Length: 347
Image (cartoon, rainbow, N blue to C red; front, top):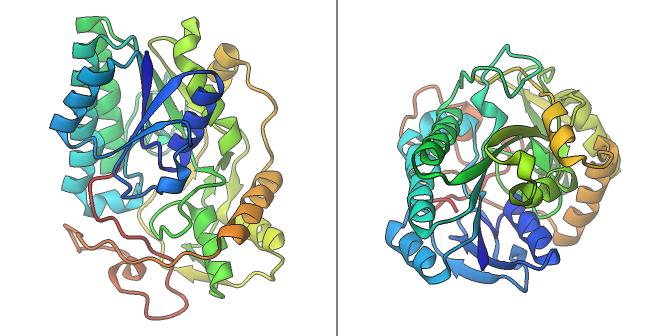
């Protein structure tokens, strides 16, 4: 029987699809290419262009393939921007997920694997533990936590198993480096290739544990096949937090340039975010993590091959009030961060 990977033309989804194909599974990728790229889809996967928000399409796919397992990675993951695109966020990240859950229950899917986010924790809950009561600070985190709760309800009512992952700040090859609203490492690399300074919101002392893709994707792909992982939540990613200022130094060194930093006004965001991964280590026994320096070096080597990416601002801002100035205007100066277009429902 086939497995479904939503968002499989995107960054994390394509890597998870690779892992599943390597293990001999028949993989169907559903993606609307709003944030992903057709060249990311593994050659041996069956590709369907479409959105998880298209309920008719979702139902038709489940009737056709009767997916044994679902790996749901489709989302628009611009956490900071979610304050200003609330309807878009909930329509895609919540309502679209419910379409999948309904179809999975009706099709008798054995296990539903969902990539949530440490955004569900909010702030001042460090280290972030799976047992901590989530208190999301933004609509993106709210939507992710709502899907988590819905999966628990579906399990209790219908018996469909699930595994929930809360990854954080994942980076690596195939990431959309032209996205101005998310993925700071990709933004930095793209800015350097365009001859622009690196733009940092605030003083740069906010911390994140940047997680290389090979430390995350294999664990997600294994989830339905690890019995003790069923119906549990796992943080997954790197243990060591770094400041954004230090990250900028690491990226510049890998790119072979002297740092040029432009500090922009701070935005409303969680300042410090890192989590415990003891539960994931116990369940999955992952190998040694890739260091920030090594992971960035690998991503830089890939990015130099594909070149800089141009992009445009998000055209459907719903609430312009308090939007960071660098996001509110078109790219008029070299200081403005790189951007990406988001034309349709994310998948």
